[in-house]
Image (cartoon, rainbow, N blue to C red; front, side, top):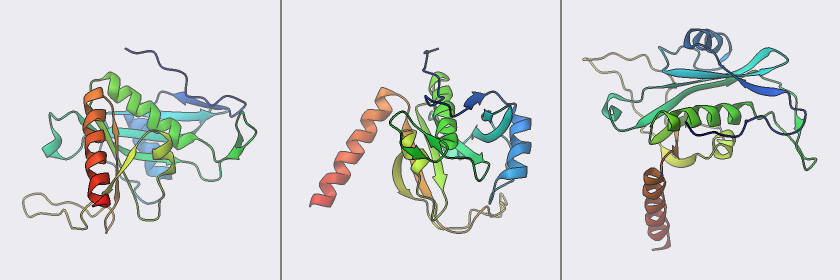
Length: 191
């Protein structure tokens, strides 16, 4: 396993990465997630604590069936308590608590160590993806706006409408593939 720096921001933020079981993570998400509290399961999870209280939880899970064996994983839920205090960083700037960014980084680091190639996550309309960008994710467009319920496999609609798709490469090969895609997109826009 690769040693990584501790994810607590320097200064006196008091936010620390902590382990959590999948069962406890799913229970915490069910109690706190603002628009998608139900989650069927998770492969692994992480928590952020402040003063021995959990203030954020995230889970990583399986993507769609077509992703099996592709090395892709989904950060399926990230939830933080509302109203967390602003923090002051080394330069004296204040900004929102880094709880979600810390969770994205922790889960993508774990996924990379487990051999995954890419991590994906999704945002609801109106969410700017600030935490995802800070954790190294790249915006990759929107999902299709369709109902995924099928006669052969019924699905409960999680949220109607298209969502933002975000990807973080976890290997050199995945980074190179993203660079090629970004170059092609830039050339297409310039034409």
